[in-house]
Amino acid sequence: MICVIIFKMEIKNCKVIKNQKIAEKHFILKFENKFSKEFLPGQFLMVALPHFYLRRPFSVFKVNKNTISILYKVVGKGTEILSKMKKGNILNILGPCGNEFNIEQKYENIWIIGGGTGIAPLIFLSEKLKRKNKNITFFYGARNKNLLFFDILPAGIEYVFSTNDGSYGYKGTIFSIVEKMIKKEEKPDVIYCGGPELLLQKVSSLSVRHKIPSFITLENFMGCGMGVCYGCVIKVKEQNGWEYKRVCKDGAIFRGEEVIWQ
Amino acid sequence: MAVNLNTELGKLKLNSPIIMASGTFGYGAEKFQFIDYKKIGAITTKTITYEKWEGNPQPRISEIPSGMINNIGLQNPGIKYFCEKIYPSLEKLKKEEVKIFVSITDRTLDNIIKIVEKLNYLKIDAIELNFSCPNFEKNNLMISQIPDKTFSVVKETKKVSKFPVITKLSPNVTDIVEIAIAASEGGSDILCMVNTVKGIFFDWGRKKIIEGGISGQCIKGIGLRCVYDVYKRVKIPIIGLGGIVCGKDALEYILIGADAFGIGSGFFSNPGIVNDVFNYLSSYLTKKGIKNIKQIVGILNEKGK
Image 1 (cartoon, rainbow over the protein chains, first blue to last red):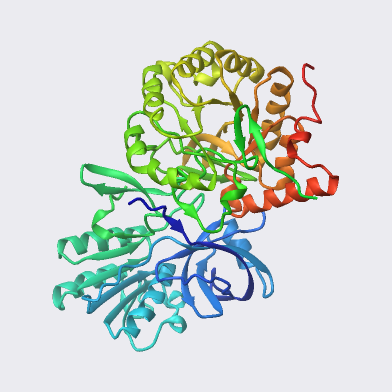
Image 2: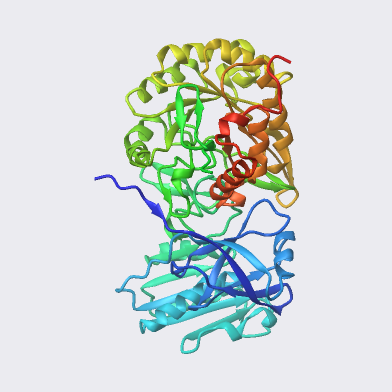
């Protein structure tokens, strides 16, 4: 029996509630949640920005009944315009886009590894896992103490911090800490990871070496966010070699072992 | 007054002049809940080749002022996979009376004919020949840049195809009218213009110059001019395409001679564009007291001049 697959994304005009600077170039934008479809951890949304032809994708980091929040860093002109948005401005938003993190009942001991703004979807994920009473260790790295956003971290989870300059937590990249820990500690049942590509790549190969399932969230420049343009593809292993898969539709969550890094 | 957006492309009857352009709507096989499919006249699939094509490596999409440049490289799973795995879902969608146009291309005439033979077994509504595929028969040019080739490939396709043939033209030619006449003389039932405009993007971050095709608002004037010039000299119906981001853009194409129009990357900017354009055209006709959109096709242009 052939079924037509239905994409349940919605397009909504949402009022900005707050656009707060939390560190140099880093912001949390909170807007009205007008969506009837629930956002799940790992999913993202596409925001239309004035003066730009293409929308920008952002991971969701917090969802309430009435509000949705994203965490972003100003990296170009688009995010710069977003950073100037004020309370009451209207944003046209498409979502929810992409797949969600695979959360299986059997995963009890969970490692979450995040670097920089890559923690956004992981915070959303850890809130959900916490409600399921999972045993979570959250590894969180940033360049320095000012870029570790303690205020947005859910309580009741064990954290391991690192900074490149040693201003807080362990000194070094978060991966170097994870690598040391995995030799000492009991291995987790699953790893979830978000952050810079190098971190994703290293965590993926670590998970393969230790035979631990891993799920990573990828980022890419996107044309549509709806799976129609094939602009955001990455190489993914297939039975007979590899294939280009869409980050926006087949992802943004992929299994660590399936991604072929360029 | 009830207005009517029904239109015709030769013998093809469409519920609406809105056509989802090739490459910007996937294969059309998945359904978007936010789109009212009754407002779409036809969906054009992403271009399909005989064998599977992997497509180009990253970066594939770059943003420019009022538009974008793409070099996707016609990634597609090939005609066999399309017929077996994608078409069945498309057939279900057709129940909403959306017409299905299948875009095809390849590097040899042989392969193009083989694709058409396979499509003949399906219930589609038209075949769109994407003549902007580079390196046809080891020539540096695209088919749509060579009048003789345009004529002969259309003619051979017409001999085999059970379905009406749409020829999609590139604006990257000295005189698009010459190519349009060649396609028409070859037997093309419909013309679709324009495909993307060749361009480059300076990727300073990656230290790369990226070749690709420009689409978006910034090419509307080019598309309009091509339709404007061709309408005067060619009798077959025209699908206008290039830079439509709102209802007024679509209306401009209609007024200068397009019987229907394509929405391309404008769908990325505004996924709600189908509703917006449909509603704009309906209220425009109501305000002007015009019953049918067909009455205004080409009224700001003249045949034979």
